[in-house]
Amino acid sequence: MAGRPREFDRDQALKQAMLAFWRRGYESTSMSDLVAALGIASARIYAAFGSKEDLFREAVALYTAGDGGFADLALRQEEDVAAAIERMLRDAVMLYTQPDSPQGCMVVSAATNCSEQNDGVLEWLRAQRHERTQSVMDRLRRGVADGQLGPDTDVDALGDFYAVQLHGISVQARDGVPRERLLAAVRVAMTPLLQAAIKR
Amino acid sequence: MAGRPREFDRDQALKQAMLAFWRRGYESTSMSDLVAALGIASARIYAAFGSKEDLFREAVALYTAGDGGFADLALRQEEDVAAAIERMLRDAVMLYTQPDSPQGCMVVSAATNCSEQNDGVLEWLRAQRHERTQSVMDRLRRGVADGQLGPDTDVDALGDFYAVQLHGISVQARDGVPRERLLAAVRVAMTPLLQAAIKR
DNA sequence: TTAATTGTTTGTCGATCGACAAATAATAGA
DNA sequence: TCTATTATTTGTCGATCGACAAACAATTAA
Image (cartoon, rainbow over all chains, first blue to last red; front, side, top):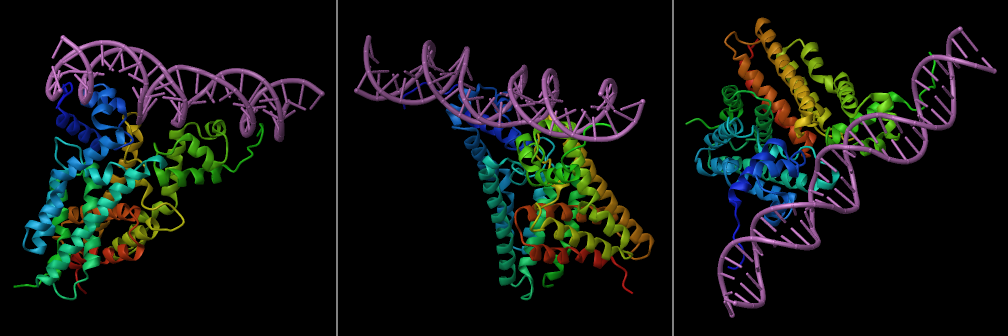
């Protein structure tokens, strides 16, 4: 491949961009913020990533492909539905309260406020949140099919309930509520599901 | 009182500002947005309200003094602690999903993303959210004192749980989850408290 | 060695941001 | 009527926004 080789680590720069966007959000992170965070001139950022929006989308993709993808993992890997939901919520707390990274969920809080011209990224993240709610409901339905939950379980209500919890944890973590308190709240949140679980 | 009388309705203008900030948030609502929403020139806005930040703070105060103050009302007016919490959550759903006003909670979502220079308003809203969590815990403690909840009730965990629920409802409402679904989720969320309630 | 390709540096672009100065208009009290 | 006070109109300010053009540098393939 011809051409002058890049002098900075693109992956490292992308990670720094992710952290910046995660902390402040899409619109509140200016190009000059990114210049400072990535340590390279703005023209280099444009040459390497296209535009601020392109960089943001790539940063969110990095997030969801990494730690941000905890939910699908928990829902898929745990055999028991209650264990799956509890692990999802606990992993959310652990990630959202990590001391050496921004608090809260990037997908929830990186584009809450944005002007009309950037509604696109807002809708994009909204769709991802919607998908996660669907994943939770799918997992609950599997729990019913597996005989772990009663056949009369209101899957939709439970699913919305846990989606609310997941997103609420992000808000509370962002407000600085300590990890231990949120873990205690998760234990409380498991009550409805344990009640719907078939005892064995 | 001397001086030329104001030619526009200040209260009406403030209400429009509240709606604009509620919908888009503090930083994402530009002065030109406000000029369009209030229907008056920017110099008149500055003359009447001081600055954009002053206007925002007054708008939030209007919100919390009005519909946004539902939580304290519910917690104070209901004699039974479970009824109080349930009404708070249900009122939250009703307000956050009102079709003719912005979705979600203004205190939760009007300053999620903001740049460093406006951290002041972010912290201000955060403090208000913290106060609300405290109100919930205080109400739960009163429930224990009133003998409505068992003496071994983990008030802190329950309080954090309902704070998570309250703020999560705002996120979900903002994402367009219908009122009925969120009300169903609230019914699920009442399970832990009803379990802690002393049967009579 | 040359040509093609890609990265970097430097500087700047037009648009928009929040904010206000100055001039003018309308009221109340002396 | 005159003065003090407040509101409105008009225009514009410096700062910052995201974005890129042009010139130059470094690499590979021919």
